[in-house]
Image 1 (cartoon, rainbow, N blue to C red):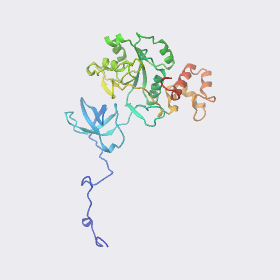
Image 2 (image 1 turned 180 degrees about the vertical axis):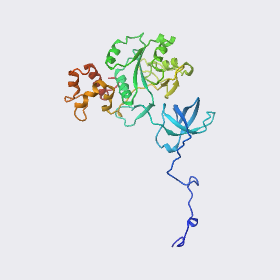
Image 3 (image 1 turned 90 degrees about the vertical axis):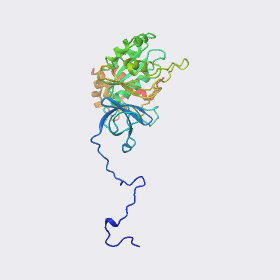
Image 4 (image 1 turned 135 degrees about the vertical axis):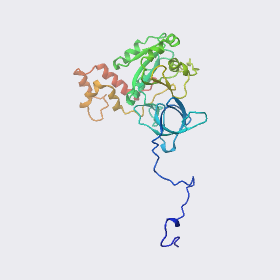
Length: 336
C-alpha cells in the first residue's frame, strides 16, 4: 500500500528525529576558523592541559578527531571556554602538523606505537655513569629513535664523581654528539643546570632516561619554580630506579624561550616502529655512498656499497661502524 499519494511534496514526509537529538546528521565538519592556538603541556586521563597565550587551559579532545590523540608538545586549535578558570573545559578541535615525533614501543615485538612527545627539537639522553650502571644499548636505541623522529641528540652524563666518563664518551665520539658531564655536587649547587642550559636555549628539549639516573632532579634544577617531587631511589638488588615522573610534562625554561619536557623513566625502548632505512639520514657523510647499494640493502651485508665508499676515503671507518652498531640495536636487548 502506498503511504503517500502521487503528488506528495516535502511537507507530506514525516522526518524521523535523531535518537541523540533533533539536529540532522551531516558529514560536514565545522572549520573552526576562529579557534585559538595552544600547546599541549601534559595529558592526564583524557584531560589535556594546554598553554593558550599566557594562561593554562584544561581541555578535552573533540569527538570529530576520532582516534587521533594529542600528546605533549602538540600545537592544537581550541574552542570553548579559554579563560583557564577553575571548573572550565575547552575543546581541542584540530591537531596541527608535527615537525618531529619521538616514538617508542614497549618492546621490539609490540605493534603498538607510543608517541612520547611531538615537535621537540632535541632529545637529551640522561645516563648515570654509575649507580645505576650505564646501559649503552638503551642509549643506542634512544639515538635511533631521535634520528628517525627528526630530533637532535644530546648526551647528559651524571654522577661523574662515581666513575669516569671517558670510556662511554669514546664509544660515541665518532657520532659527533654534543655532551655534558655532571657530578652530584654540581647538580646540588646549580653548576650542572647552567652548563646544560647552554644547550637548551631556544629549543624544545625532551629529557629521557631510565629511572634513578637523576633526570627529574636535573629538570627540577633547570626549572626550580616548577619543582616536581623526587621520591625515587635505586634498588640495591636490581640496580634499577623507581619512577619519580608518571606523565610527560612540558615546562618553560626560565629566562629563555626554551622548553624542557620531563618524561617518565623508561625500562625499555622498543623500536618495532623504526624503518632501518631511515637511520642512514643521520649520517650524511655515508648516505651518498648508498647509491651503489643493492635494493633494500641493510647496510651490513657483503654487497653493501658503503665498504667501498669508506675504503676510497670518503668517510671515516669508525662512522660506518657506528651506523651498523645502531642498525643492529633492534636485534639486541637494552641490557645486553
